[in-house]
Length: 79
Image (cartoon, rainbow, N blue to C red; front, side, top):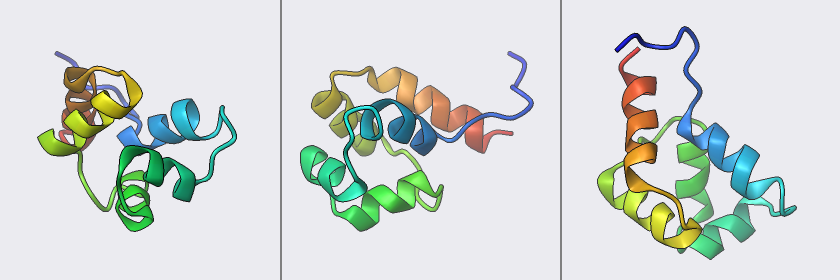
């Protein structure tokens, strides 16, 4: 499979789809998913990767798919 020229970070998708639209801030979102604000911010800034545990937690909290989150991570770090 061909890698995208400019893959986006998984954290960017969290911000654009799950934090900004409902008008949340990072602290509110972190509380919603049961994380610290630091953990969330590190993911958004690509200082922390998406582990299987992270993907499962997000999928459960947000009603999303674990495989999609892991695929985004693999594409971003594989570039």
